[in-house]
Structures are given as C-alpha cells and as structure tokens.
Length: 253
Image (cartoon, rainbow, N blue to C red; front, top):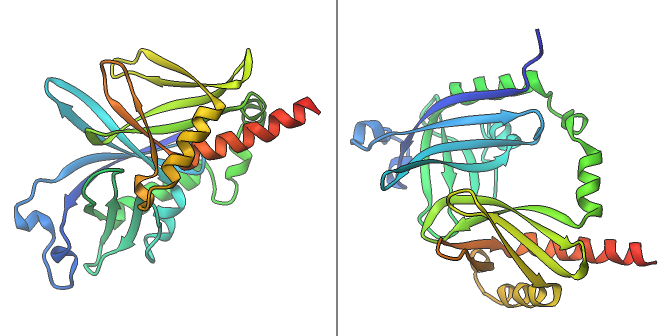
C-alpha cells in the first residue's frame, strides 16, 4: 500500500464579527448567520503550505476559491495567535474553537470560528505525510533551481471585483531577450493570457506602486482583455526582478 501524499479535511466555518469574539458571546450559529462550507487540503509536493478552499457561485458558474498559507499557522495557532499577513489563526475564548481571519487584498476582513478538533485532526494527518522540520526533504530542488536559472517565478494575482478570487500566474525572462519579462496568467475560462513587458517598465511600475502610503495598496494592476483586472503584489515582482537581474549578471560574467 502506497503511503498517502495528500490530506483533505471538510470544515464548517461560522462567520463572526468583532462583538462575537468577546468573552461570553455565543458563536455565530446561534446568531442566525449562515455557515460556510470549506475544505483544508495539503499536498506532499508543497510541504510547507496548506490550502483553504471555498466553493463560490458567480451567476450560473461555480468555482473554488483558494487561500494558501503556511502549515505552521495551524500548528502554532492552536496555542497562541499566529500570522501577520493575509491569514491569521488564534485560539478563541470558547473552548474547542479557533478564530480564522482572512484579509482580502481589497475587501472587508473576514473572521470565522472553526472547530479546534478538526484542525488538530488535519494537522496530525499532514504530519504523518510529511513530518514537521522534514519538509525540505520533499522539495524538488532540481526543479526549483531550473526555475531560478530560467528566471521564472510563480505568483498569485487577485481579482479586483472579487476579493476572494485569485489566479496563479508566472513571471519569466523572455528566452530571446533578457530585457523583456513575460507575464502569463489564465483567463476566467482557463486560456492563458500572455504579456511581454520590458524589465525597465516593470521596474517603473514597482517603483510607482511602492510610493503608495498604504502597504496593502502596493500592487501592480494588470487588465486581462475582456475579462478582469488583476492585482499583482509588488513584493513578488521586486523579488523576481532582483533575482533575475543577479542571475543574468552571473551568466554574463
């Protein structure tokens, strides 16, 4: 029997507001709010991360929205508050519950109560697949090195009109011109959309975005023709430009 390489766990998330998080307040189920059904997923090929999947309906179409964050948040968050970015996990005063907070790029902060026992069960199952502190043994370093030497990076882009929506894309140096960057992202129907932009222009966009006072507003906007406007975090772009620049210098020396 082959060892498991993935774990999934169904969850019921109860929406709460700030008042309901105070001691003595009943959980949102008793306040009449509708629960959200979700799934936690873990893959051995991506050993440091977990995915929280939500079903979402837009018109007649249905899709899954995915939030990715570190497995360590679920481990630490059962005992004390963990996370400083888009996702945080913390114990709740009510025994048996955790508070899961999601912050969309442009949207209202979302808070949920989730059963601690289900999270603990999921974490325990992931540890059986990949033990903690042994994640590095499951990473394909040859693939990661190939992506680095090819000046390629995986990035996540958010949709402006749908705060929970995101699409996985890539930044890559053009194989025929090191001064060009190729940006690839799937459209809403899955067809890849490709931009070619000069490295200098992308650097100008990064500089412009970094001048924004609010950290969460530091994004690059990309309009998919006839589809949606996507937000690309400026930090990911800046890191790609720095790595690819130094790699190009090493290759030219």
